[in-house]
Image 1 (tube, rainbow, N blue to C red):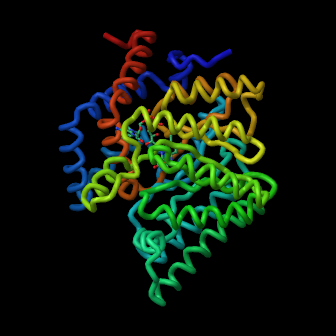
Image 2 (cartoon, helix red, strand yellow):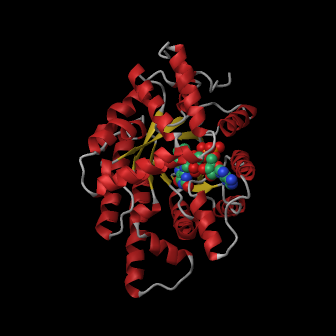
Image 3 (cartoon, rainbow, N blue to C red):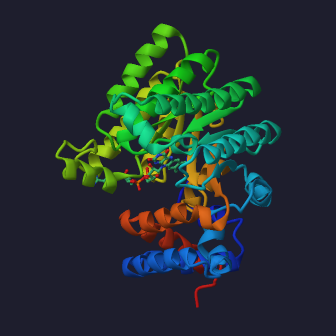
Amino acid sequence: MQPNFENTAIAFELKTDSQLERAYFLFKMIANEPLVKIGTAMTNFAIKAHLPVEGLIRATVFDHFCGGVSEEDCLSVIDNMYTKGVYSILDYSAEGKEVDNQFDSALEKTLEILDFVKEKDAIPFAVFKPSGFGRFKLYEKVSAGVELTESESAEWGRLVNRYEKVCKKAHDLEVALLIDAEESWMQNAADDLALQMMRKYNKEKAIVYNTFQMYRWDRMNYLKKLHKIASEENFKIGAKVVRGAYMEKENERAQEKGYTSPICKNKKETDANFDAAVAYSMEHLEHIAIFAGTHNEESSLKLISLMQERNLDPSDDHIWFGQLFGMSDHITYNLAAHGYNAVKYVPYGPVRDVMPYLIRRAEENTSVAGQTSRELALIQKERKRRKLDS
Ligand SMILES: Cc1cc2nc3c(=O)[nH]c(=O)nc-3n(C[C@H](O)[C@H](O)[C@H](O)COP(=O)(O)OP(=O)(O)OC[C@H]3O[C@@H](n4cnc5c(N)ncnc54)[C@H](O)[C@@H]3O)c2cc1C
């Protein structure tokens, strides 16, 4: 039987009435673009001025989009979701770090989380962001093929070492590890590192997963190229397939610097590219494991159909569906109710440090046409069902 994404009773089963009301209020605010702009500016100011706004942020956006301030703090959220068969990925979301000791502490955190993942069935993957392990500008330089100074080469060596440590530990513990993707002008270097790690640690199965941003028109060829390398050298590809989160930035930079934008011409082309990458991976499951990170219902249903055509068990561990905590519960919970591997990225970290993440979520929900109105319509439907709608 096909999951029904309209089933709001399943989607919001874990939400109390007051949590549902908070979500309704929050998405109503987020739908208002001027309000998000003003709210963002005021919050940035308040945080910088050390005004006591953390309590307010925590009780509103933070608790809706984040699991907590520490791993332990997230445990009740994780355990609760797991009662409905929904898995979690702890995503340490402190951003904008620039110096070595911060990268080292991000590494330590990821290493700790790997132990956590090993212990807990509810957490199937660990994750890190390339810019969490090294300076963005350094990735950028390496991506552009610019020669590094002596001290930069040493810095790059330390960065590679962090990749090496975390991927080796993931391999030794047999815990899968996702690597997020970021802006295209730093991604070549990150992709090359991910490839090195897959070569080394994905010999028996997919441990290291790189992310393919399918809003980039060149990514389908990249996936095919990587598949060819993997078949020849006999290792597995872990493919986290997403549409991509930095579209405006990518287009603006391309225009500013006068090069062709790496982004597909329109949404329809991105959608087709995403679905093509998933279909291609499904045809090559002997070499590729898929993590479909999407809130798109159609793409999720297409993947389900492909699984059904191949008579695959919904819980086949080569195929995962991922959504962000606080968004698209109608997809996650209905998938899980039908036995599919559905997992939430659960961001966490000190309130101040996760602000850039929270602001991105608010802006994304404002700018992604349809996303907020869909969330609101579903919450409204559930409010009616529970007769909260007065
Ligand atoms: C579990 C998970 C992990 C993620 N990890 C990453 C990551 O590592 N790196 C990353 O960049 N993003 C990541 N994302 C975010 C993701 O890339 C998307 O921004 C987000 O999920 C919205 O896309 P969607 O597939 O859910 O669906 P939709 O809402 O159907 O699609 C919206 C997306 O379509 C694309 N799009 C919209 N308009 C246009 C247009 N005019 N032309 C071309 N393309 C357009 C954009 O990518 C936009 O974000 C992740 C998302 C999830 C759920």
